[in-house]
Image 1: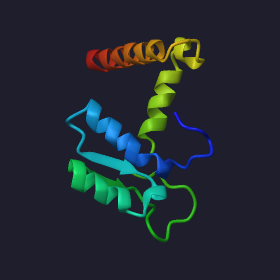
Image 2 (image 1 turned 90 degrees about the vertical axis):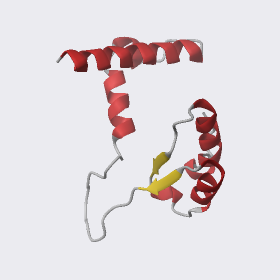
Image 3 (image 1 turned 135 degrees about the vertical axis):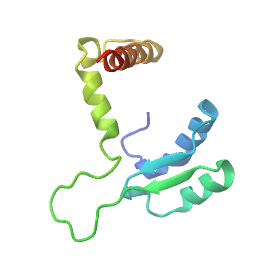
Image 4 (image 1 turned 90 degrees about the horizontal axis):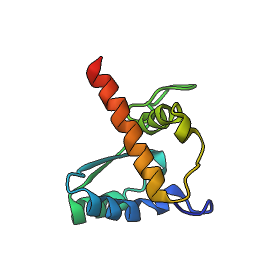
Length: 115
């Protein structure tokens, strides 16, 4: 979590560093057009071997267009929001919220496996 006066692109490098510490499998990251400068992408490739792909709109398209990989996070938040316990932030500790999210995601995966 960061303050609202910080831009997303300012947080990419610390986020990549934290991601590499948590997962040795991190190899590819999709970002939106706010990260077009490419400097962090160069750092990520040089230091960690991670490729950073900017998802852009096709040229000449007017109006709304579904972009590849763009709505994955929003879709996941919508799935989580359908569970009453996660519809509001009831938890005091971050670890409790994280445990609830893991539980809900396990439930969602099990439902898909049984269909």
